[in-house]
Image (cartoon, rainbow, N blue to C red; front, side):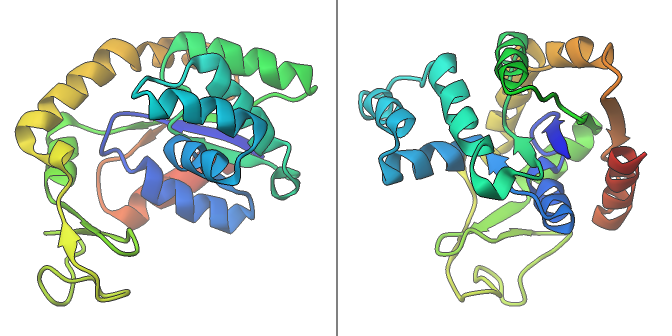
Length: 214
């Protein structure tokens, strides 16, 4: 199964995508993590990406597509993959479609995780992340047992700068301008599914899994 999850910040793509990928036995490919891993491993595309990152520049789409191509042809992706964080706009989606076609494959599901603006702000502004292991908590929905400290490893928890309410508003604006047009692009394709991402984690996951398996 080859999947793409997309939607606004705070819709739950990372959390739900990780669970779904584990259940399906396929890798979750998070663009940022993939970039850092490729640079660390010194792959051909990783070296190219590293040159841009070291210069403080955005990594061009063609390099990111090349990295994704390297990643999805790895042995652990033989049965499929779940992409989280890419594509971010229609141009990237078209480039990825062309790349997959060169390998004789296509996306099986493209899932849009839809959530209300109030829910997005609430989720993002309450998010807490462990500095050591990266585990994610939420002040209201999944708080740590001891305030400020991670249940998993004992590391210190922090709030990302871009999870402040004033920054969240800007992030959502950028999403609406750049990423939301993907909805129109993908909604015309038979692989497209829309999932209501409001509500509790278990309910959202049940709807997501049903949409993927239907």
